[in-house]
Amino acid sequence: MPSSLPAEHLTGWAEGMRQLQRLAGQLNALDEQKGKYLTVSELKTAVFAIMQSLNRAVPLEEQLRELTALPVGQPWSAARGSLAEPHLQQPIVEYALLKRNQPASPPAALPETGEPSMSEAVK
Image (cartoon, rainbow, N blue to C red; front, side):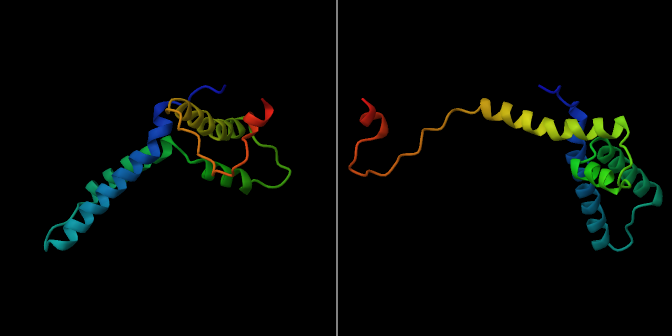
């Protein structure tokens, strides 16, 4: 079983999106108030924090895009391949763990056919 990705790899994208939403909210609120603005320094600080969060968790799709952009026949560096592989495996592992911790749902009822069930017919 692959080892778990560090927590920051799982939360970086979500944190970056929350920061973007906060910044968009600030900009929209300032847009409605005459004479209010963000300084360039405040905006740069917000953008830097967002970029840091997003860079902690490069999405699998972006990693695959980068691999696709390499010239055909050029070997991948070990680092490139080793970055994408856990991102392919880890969601499956996480999903399996989540699924295993869920209570079992009752089996779906089959419509009555008037015929004995397979288990009754085998008896």
